[in-house]
Amino acid sequence: MHYSLRRSGHMEMAIFALAMLAFALFYFAGPAFAGADTTFDTALTKFTDFLEGSGGKIITVLSLAGGIVALASGRFSMGQIAIPVGVGVGAGTGIPIVTSTVTATI
Image (cartoon, rainbow, N blue to C red; front, side, top):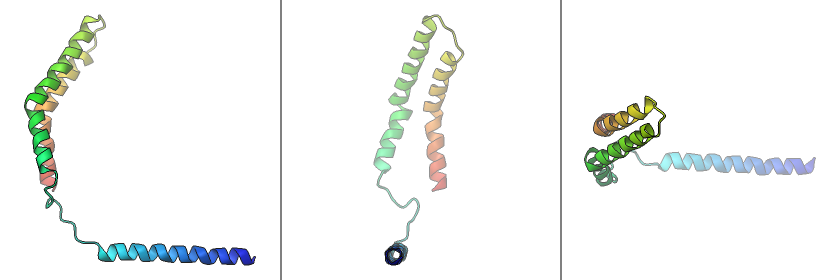
């Protein structure tokens, strides 16, 4: 019986320590401003330019080539046509839509 009481004292001390740590984290936390950070702007710009330019064209051509190879293998499926078309549309128009949505949200 004495052991369980002593052990519960350790549990209470641990809970108190965690509560104090949580309070300190909330008390000393600085404000966060959405959209004020420009850390990844360079990478985002390069990636967006790549996908909207030659990268998007390369991805679309590779997807189309994969669909043509699958068609040549003899098993026809509508997905072999629809997937390359979807990839091309996504690469051409999807990036500006996602970028404008993220910018509007921030």
